[in-house]
Amino acid sequence: MSFFELIKIELMKIKRGKILLLIFIAPMLVVFSGIGGLKNYLTPEFTNAWAAMFIQSALVYSYYLLPFTMIVVSTLIFGREKSNNGILKMLALPLSRHRLSLAKFFVLVFFLIIELIVFLLVFVLAGIWATKNANIAETLPILYLLNWCIKIFLTMLPSLASIWAITIIFDKVILSVGLNILLVIPSILVAATPLRIVYPYCYSGYLVSCSLYDFTSTGINNNFELFPLMPIAIFILAFAILLAIIQFGKKEMR
Image 1: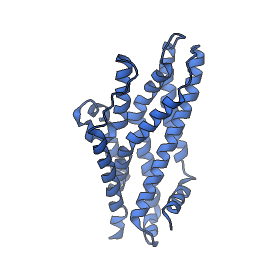
Image 2: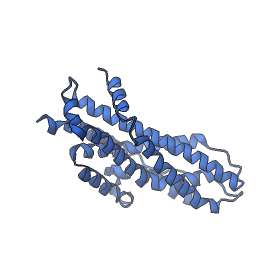
Image 3: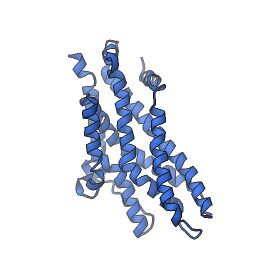
Image 4: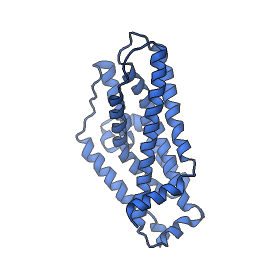
């Protein structure tokens, strides 16, 4: 069985679940609250309205709501195998448990992409309504928004891999969810310290925070430093994926 077929099977397992409904909640909540809080300040003379609305919406989303959603999605994906000893039945098949774990992580990445697409679509619709309501004639900067969503996606990957690894290692739901939430909560504080480069849970939020600082001080110019953060982030991503692959099904195989 090819790796692509494994991913297809994993997607079929969860297509009847509530994950797709879940990933609509956070984007809609944060976009409408973010733009709703800013729309009273929008005037026809307001410049860079789309950038201001995006930063306002993406800040809390990237720090908290997106990681929280991925924690729940990760728990649902792994919990589906734990229920009714499904993981034992799966491991009894002539399939590599390492490939199964990697396939499940790719499914998790797929849902991250879907959520960011939903976030972008909801934001564009809400933004069009807000700009028209304020009589702002600023053109929709679709490339700017796509660029930011891609950046949030890439900076979210190390955190997503860490969430997945913890979900597998601590297979008790209360432990894995609790530990992941505890790691997400201080991310906004860690982002203000030099420790941010080794703390993947704050990468996406820190990225947006840099843009917020530059936007309010010297214009729109992201000062997000790639080095030494990028090589450390790649190492964390690879290490977390490897750890999840090694630990997946290990207890059940004993």
